[in-house]
Amino acid sequence: MNNEKLVEENLGLVHACCKRFKNRGIEYEELYSAGCLGLVKAAGRFRPELGVRLSTYAVPVILGEIKRLFRDGGTVRVSRSLKELSLRLNRFAESFSSQNGRAPTVGELAELSGESRERVAEALNAARQPLSLSCDDEDDRPPEPYTEDTTELLCDKLALREVIRSLDIGDRKIIELRYFKRKTQQKTAEALGMTQVQISRREKKILLKMRERLAL
Image 1 (cartoon, rainbow, N blue to C red):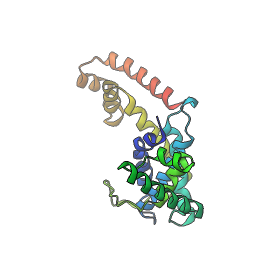
Image 2 (cartoon, rainbow, N blue to C red; image 1 turned 60 degrees about the horizontal axis):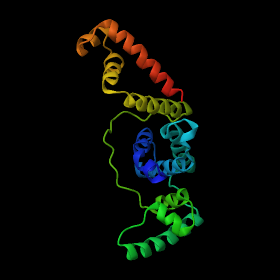
Image 3 (cartoon, rainbow, N blue to C red; image 1 turned 45 degrees about the vertical axis):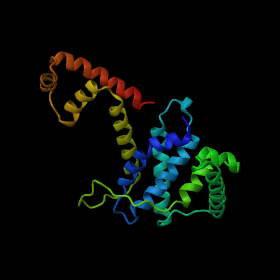
Image 4 (cartoon, one colour; image 1 turned 180 degrees about the vertical axis):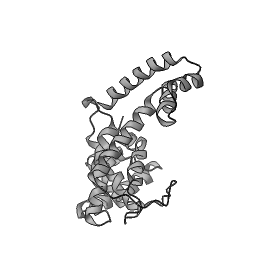
């Protein structure tokens, strides 16, 4: 899978990370831009053969860019070389579009410019105006303090969410009833038309599978 596809399929990770830092003095658009930059960097360096999922590898990188934004006091800083590359890429893109009747992909721009895909994506992202994004789960709770424990907890939550999502529908339903709706094994068995013994055995296997995947 190419980097563009990896980035597209994992933009949800950026939103999940950014939402944790809302209402802390930096606009969501800036958080999102920084998070996207982190995702692009992670996708460019990601190696599937290492046996970890992109999300596991990307979350710390995304959070690192967001933390840097807080350290710098907001506004993603763009280097002069990146600005110059962005202008050069725009010229390549205009020429390509006039000749081919469509916009070039990141890979095609990398080939035309002689730059890496990661560098091209970084330049394009830096040059892009902040998107007008809306957050769908605003609440009135005061923001929690930002700490290293917050970062670790967020990584754990995202990893757990992904593992649960990877389960088949039946296994996911058992976990939902047992651990989110706090049903007893007997109540879970009744809801799913199974026996308590079947639920007990199945639950042990599911938890073992989840532990193995979280340990990757």
